[in-house]
Each structure stands twice: as C-alpha cells, then as structure tokens.
Image (cartoon, rainbow, N blue to C red; front, side, top):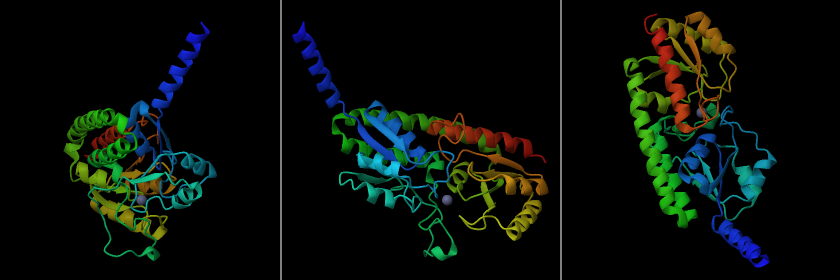
Length: 298
Ligand SMILES: [Zn+2]
C-alpha cells in the first residue's frame, strides 16, 4: 500500500514538473488576453496595467519587479508606449527574461519624421495604440505564438493550433464588425486621446480632432473653444473617450455641440463584459454603432 502511495506521489511530481507552465508578464491586459488565447493552460500570465488605466502612465510598483523576477517572457507593445517599464525590468535583474516587442510587423500609423519630445508628444515612434485594430491583433498573435513556441518547444503544436483557432475566430468577428459599421463609413468623430487611429482606419471612420491639443497634453479652454466651433461647423456628433479620463470636458463639449459622449474600452477589462480581446472590440463596435445610428440624422 505504502509503495503504491509513494509511486503515485512520484508520478504526480513528475507530471507537474513536465507540465511546468511558461511564466508570462505583459504590460497591458490586451496582450495578456492574446497570450491566454495562444497559451491556454500552459501559461501563467499576469498583466501589469489594468484595463481602466492609462497605458502611458502606469505607477511602477515594486510588486511588478517581483513578478518580473520569476518570469520567462515579457510582452510589451513597444513604440515608447511603456516608458515606465525599463526601471522595472532593470530592478528585476532577471537575465533569463526574454522581452518581446509586439509592435513588430504591425503597419504603423503617424510615424513622425523627427522625434521631438519637447513638443510634449508621448507617441515618439508612431501611434502605439495598435491593438485596437483586430487585424493588428492577428499580427500580435503571430509574435506571441513564435515566442511561446521558442520558450516551450514541447507544446509547439498546441500553441500553433490555438493561434490558428483564435485568428479564425477573430477573422469572422472582424467581418461582422465591418458589416455593423459599414453604414457609417466616412463619419467624423472626435476622440479624447489619440488612441483610436487604427480602429478608425479599420472601420472607415474619420478622425476629425482630439480633446487633447497634443497626445498627453490636457485640454485647454482655447483648444476646446476651437474644437466646439469645428464640431458645429462640420456637424460632428460623436466624442469617444477612454475610460481613464474625467468626463468633465467631453460633457462640456457635448453640451455645446449636441454631440454624444461614448466611453469605449481602450483595453481589455476596462468595463464589465470586456474581459477578452474579442469581447472588448465587440463592446466598442456595438456601442459605437448604436450611437452612430442615434446621431445619424441629427
Ligand atoms: Zn497614446
């Protein structure tokens, strides 16, 4: 009896060591969602930022250093979005940590011809909000699958199958979203921060202006006055805001122009019902389509 118990324990220990999970840290919950889609039960994934946080400005807590100390892989968006990340990586002193830049291979928008941070631009290498176009999500899934296969070759076919399945799911969702927003192609929208260029390009919306005079610079009364005049002139009825801003200025502009303020999920987990990458985009598309429908004939 004792012999059986010992051999059972030994077998369990052996099985658990063979099934050691890949330890992954991501900067954003969007990347965590994509990693989970590819890695399934073979990965243990933690996101540093939460979906309701501004991805440009994350408080680098010491607890994140602890997570990075024991991680195998770190996925980031790149393009200078995570300016807060380097001190955490340096603090972790993890020589085995592999950092994966998920912007690799993504066709970029708004790449500046020269970098001048004195202008207050927090998008120094092009617009970093790449994950809000599902087509970019597919490219990011490729990068994630490559990294997981390298880190854990024993489960390569598992990762490969998951990647293919999720990309297929994303493809059919994308077709449905394009259909839903098709009647509103060429509609002008205002956004608070410049987070939505990839989303807008995908679905044919026109970015007519921003509440921020420049990315990272809070709205000023002069800028808001100009924006209100432009919106009246061009009959712009939609203001999209990220969940981490105050709705004071959007509401003020909406009051002056008769526009509708929409708080959309700019990251996974920003609101209830946006816990997965596809769910998040679905939430945004549906809310936006509804608002576009309501304001189309104003
Ligand atoms: Zn930004």
